[in-house]
Image (cartoon, rainbow, N blue to C red; front, top):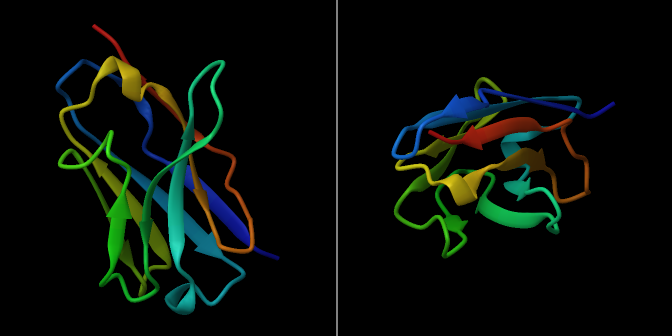
Length: 113
């Protein structure tokens, strides 16, 4: 059974940083591309960043380019999202996802002074 568990969210001031983690189990993590999504209140869920199975290829939404970095540690079956220079509009629940549409439970990120 595939399980994805996100952690690392919290309350941070504008300009601050957070690192999200997504611990995966029940799948061959090292051969699975992964992605991060987020959903703000009243808005649709949107793709934030994606990474290939090897970690060599990454992509990110224009709204987070230059501020967020997606990475992975296949030995630990863990996906990461390093978020720097956070803005209030980054406030959302952040989810990790597999291509076969397994989702984690999400972790709340709130950016506020």
